[in-house]
Length: 256
Image 1 (cartoon, helix red, strand yellow):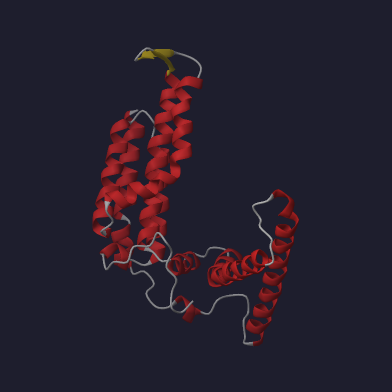
Image 2 (cartoon, rainbow, N blue to C red):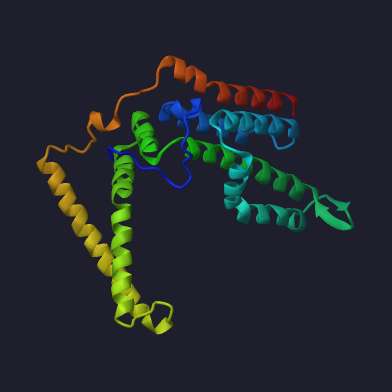
């Protein structure tokens, strides 16, 4: 863990957003998302303001719109569901291009599309500017339950080991004539999954006992977190985006 682990969404850069401590970015993202969700769906102008905020942060972080929009396709199943709402909704209906659409369904589709897209983009910006290790460190500094942060820590540390073990087991199985593509060989595949689970359990027990023998008390040492806890100035800088978002949401609630 000392070397740090990057994930596929992380974008290496020396931008001001990258240099912010992880805890302030996590809090800023969560508060921004809360402001977006609290905004009435009829306040269309407010979502334009949120989009401008996301674009400004992306520019500061040197994350291009093409990269953001490409990764945002993960929400495509929800978008398809949103497009179905105007046809499935009930109540008052309007004619659009010869189609009878539900007014409530149109509002619901817009609500899902706008808020979901902004939430996904905010999460992608957090992932693009923060390594996985720093995300866990940030959660620990925010007093996230230890059981969660430590499970995530060990998962991050040993995920590659387990993937490599599963790959070797598959190569051994295929070299003996087994092919999991065939239905009648599912039994062998299930046996391999069970063996992998047992190996992972035994490895975890050995690692835990080794850590206890070296003084592990159930909490990661402070040295693992490293220096660089957020200063008051950094908290103030990160609070700019959620503060503007909260102001937009408040005005939208008053006007709607």
